[in-house]
Structures are given as C-alpha cells and as structure tokens.
Length: 178
Image 1 (spheres, helix red, strand yellow):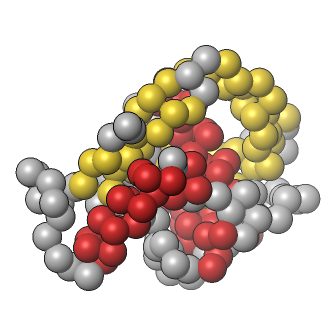
Image 2 (cartoon, one colour):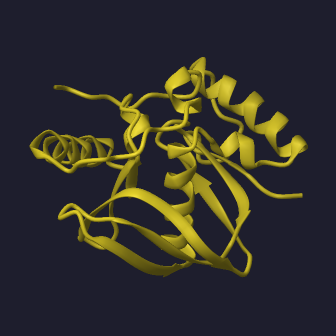
C-alpha cells in the first residue's frame, strides 16, 4: 500500500493512536513502508504511524544511519530544559523554537517483541518527544505559547497557500521564542 504524509488539518493527526498488541508480518511490512515514506521525505529523521494515516503506536527513526523502530513508547523519565528549533513533516516549511526536556528515558517494545529502554538527550530526546506527541494526537502548534501559535498559524497559512514565506531563506520560516 502506498502511503503519503498527512499534513496539518487532517483529523488523523489529532487522534490518539491504538496500542500494538501483536508484532506480526503485517506490522513488519508497515514499518518498512514507514521507512520508505521517511526517506522519500528527504527532510525528516523520524516518522510516526499517524503521520501516514495509520492509528497505531509506532514510530520509526534514522539518526546517523541506524534504522530504529519502537512500539507503544512512553517516556518514563525526563530532566532539564532545552530550547531548540523544531520542524515537522506534517507541518512542512515551518520551524519553531520550542522548550522541551533535555533528556528522556524512553521505554517501549522493539520489532522482536522485547521491552527496551533507551536514554536520550538533546536531538534524540526531542525527536522521541515529538514522535510520541504524534501518537497522542498532539502537534507542534499545541506546544507553542499563544503568541507564537498565532504567528505560526499565520505563517503556515501563507506557506499552505503558496505565498512566499516572510523569511530570508524563502522556503523555511523560523519562529523564535519570545
């Protein structure tokens, strides 16, 4: 089955994904399809199943050339605070500074059905938090301050309508925290 990335406004992105109860061949094919979509995007480092219209608690990532997948992930610990510019394949062209915990401990199930834990910081920790948000129906807009959200929504409308972004580099609009 051919999948494509769902973008902001698609109701599937605002719905909580269902837990995985059995890792079978169909699920393995879905994981492979998710990696295909991720690589076709040419911009992302991770992809959650709801971003392709599949309401299952799965996300895949490729950080530094190592394909990884996790089912039913949860963050069991977090610490610190880190401001970083975040983008989303489902909100293309928009990059926003968001505050998130700097370190996390992620727990879930791997492709073999084994429970795994993974400690992460900075980029990897942010990626885990961002993808876990997708599994819970939460988007970047939901994490923004009210002023930042208004500005981001205005800019995303401009981008969606094909109007030029108000940024110097033309195709990527960056919004800073205030």
